[in-house]
Length: 182
Image (tube, rainbow, N blue to C red; front, side):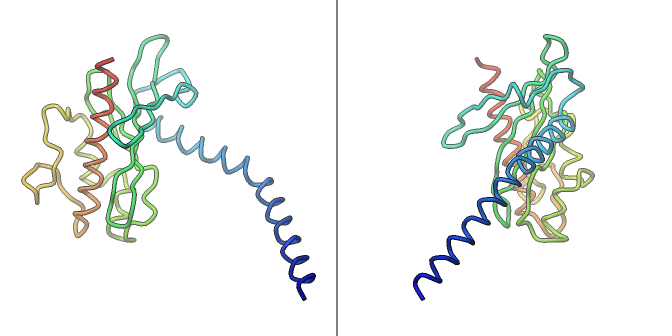
């Protein structure tokens, strides 16, 4: 019996290893394509490959990725990738800034555990919470939902997700400020 179970485990392990090796590269390529699409959505037109020039910035205990977007040798924007807490877990956000610190656009890269039909609406780029970010300068605007005394509309029945999203945008702005101070 021990020999049979050992043989079954070895065969199953070998099959898992083969499947992993076959799928690892396509999964990695899909992940890079997802990041590149998010970068393209959040910064002005560029002609470099920001994902090849990525660097990391420490912000407290968190490490964020920064993708510089350039046209020629001129920086046209920075895409800052951060994680923030939502209702159902982490929300991965890409925030694009122009060189003067204005939010160009935002993209939610992942929010898989948010409540379907409520918090998952954060993935929709046309919801008011995300639309209101375009053109805002976080140095001049308090990024807080109206329920908490701010001026940003929350997703109906999903204030926690909206707060998490705004905290992520605020965190991305902190990373942007660190870049600018260097």
